[in-house]
Amino acid sequence: MNRTSTTDAIILRNSRIGDIHKRVTMLTPDQGLLSAIAHGAYSRKGTLRGVTNPFCYGRCYLYTDPVKQSVKITDLSVHEFFPGLRESITRFYSASLWAELLLKTFGGGGQSEPLFTLLLSALRALDSAVDFSPVTIQFLWRYLETGGLQPELDACAACGRRFPPSDHRYYDSRCAGFACSQCTDPAICPALSPGAAAYLAHSGGLEFSRALQIGLNAAASRNARRVLYRIVQDVAENPLNTLRIGGSLL
Ligand SMILES: [Zn+2]
Image 1: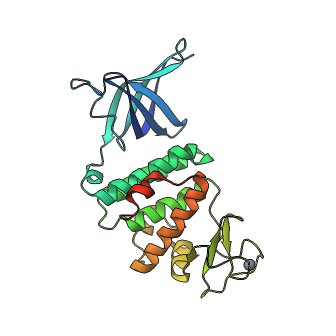
Image 2: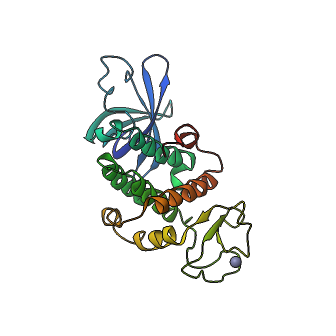
Image 3: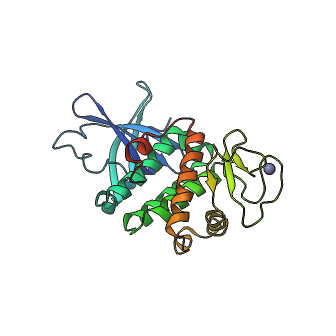
């Protein structure tokens, strides 16, 4: 067994072990979610203290102890810190929402490399975003695609009828897709407006930074977020704490 290894990583979560050690959970391109111990990272003099915080992106050096079956971080060379995430509470909560979603769905169930690339693109965009909304919409919509979970926008998931351009689509958990008003109860299923649907259909196929240049009015943006939050919580099979705590901001 190769005891030392290196990987690119984006830190998603920290938790405390004892007084000074840190358990670090990160997304990697080739191993999905990975958990490792950063010894002394909570002590004032710990060399890993400042480089193992959430959303740091860098090259992580690991040592695997085959006897203890534990992995520790020996060094982390940070490429990007994303300081802009800590300058805005909506940016920070948005990134926290993505991290919670990835942690609760074990990397989305799909391949980890596209997910890693997606998260990195989204963090770079969010770091300096004036408006967090299009970034979080693009992240969540593409996250669903990466995991093969993106609902069909063209036709009703229940009856197969194609949606006329002016129709709302109703997200129905029972079929994990968008249904027409005939097949579902519009009173209880969140409606995706025609404008928001057209935006997702058009922008979802574009390169990430190009998609952020596509205009979306505030009402359609809010609508798309609300529907996506419902869908990803369905995927997570649980309410997301970030939305419970920071929902009014997001
Ligand atoms: Zn239908």
